[in-house]
Length: 283
Image 1 (cartoon, rainbow, N blue to C red):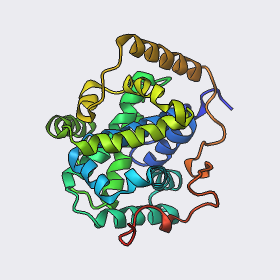
Image 2 (cartoon, helix red, strand yellow):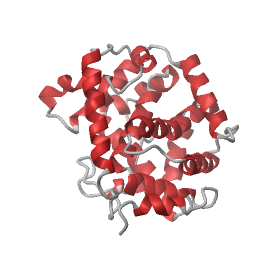
Image 3 (cartoon, rainbow, N blue to C red):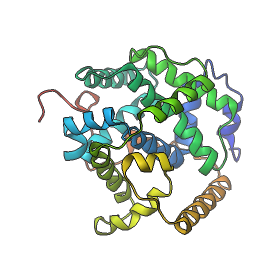
Image 4 (cartoon, rainbow, N blue to C red):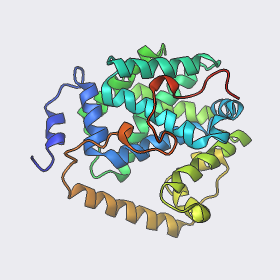
């Protein structure tokens, strides 16, 4: 297999037709770790919006069952990315997601913003931390992939270009990022979960400043998180660039790093798509 064969395959594809294949290759072959981290930060970024964080606190799921709610969100997204939106499992995952959302009054603008984070946080992450940035073709495919998902979620007024969608993303954050206690409550729980994937529970607080270095000032301000020392941010930056250099020197994965196949303590015996997420009768 060619050293970067999946990157070469993507270059031969048509983003208007092959957007799901391109998204699959980027996520599970070319950038498996980076894409997972970028999507984690995309989710985390939505917590800086009080209308989102207040809703999550009200449901109790991200506070009382943080790991399960995280796994459910990730599994639903991975079912769609791995199998395709119009596959049996993809349709089931979208139906489960839509059923969860239908229980709450969520504005179309909030839906659009969350969708925009899944487009632009991976793009920005690769620009800064990836072993290479996304190509124009890849960015277009990511946009189309989420535009198509928006249709299946009944989201309307979706911007028709990367430029217009990013303008919406930036304007929304300028207008809606503001501190609320719910932001910090959800953020702390989620951040400790993510750090806990790498550190023992007792030393999780030591990892928080490193995570703060990966956040921009408006995000930290809206979450009421401290600004980390510049020396620590420089260390994190150099470490991430070294990671990128090493990743760029290695072949892309022959076997896809599928998120649905990962062992999860939440579901030691496996899961059914219809059982993921929240339900109205649960307290």
